[in-house]
Image 1 (spheres, rainbow, N blue to C red):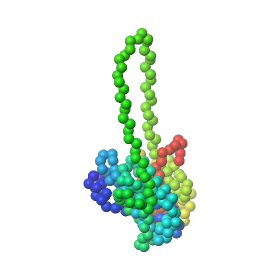
Image 2 (cartoon, helix red, strand yellow; image 1 turned 120 degrees about the vertical axis):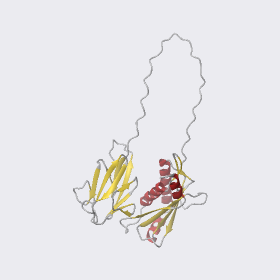
Image 3 (tube, rainbow, N blue to C red; image 1 turned 180 degrees about the vertical axis):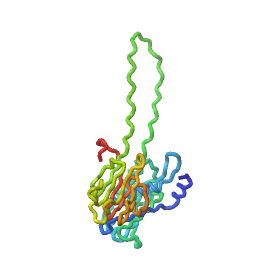
Image 4 (tube, helix red, strand yellow; image 1 turned 45 degrees about the horizontal axis):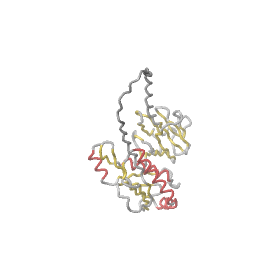
Length: 274
């Protein structure tokens, strides 16, 4: 994507829409936080090599039912959502114009379970509905100059040369995992099938799920796709029904039947097991 393409995207609000599989259940903060992080990733604006400006102002449009649910959370929950979104910007190395701001809007056009998130870059000097500061990256310390000293005269024998320090360990590769009904599964194989059948790699207890519903597979290191295996009720990725092999990113939400599956890329801390 060219720089001009990025500029064009940055001048307009980038809207993320998704549909929750079970519209009768109350909306959860984790669902909106994931949508906020995905919207931030989609709306980044390349400023220069190695520097990207991310949206900091997010308008979350909800149905009347979901709006009342979100309003009941109160400021502590919404401020925590803004804090997590701000931490995501720091982790990804994004530049952010001020604080993260989140605004909830009651939309009469949306049905229960439908959510739209619009992100843009704004000055955060006004009082936001909810906000969290983005921690600036610490500046690199300048080396302290050391004055050269003449080599002293000595009759002592030189000590053996010390062994060079071992090179720093390479960063661990990301471990792909899926979260299904609160349970986390590590994707330790090239291809994983999920469905209602007990013979699948990850069985899903949901009558709206086909016996073999989807396949999640690795295309290259860090690159994963999901494919619908001709299911009856279809497959949705971040609210959009897929008809072909679709790439998934960290935080992507896959919906099959009434079940929501969250795809994650994490750094393993116990030998690679999630």
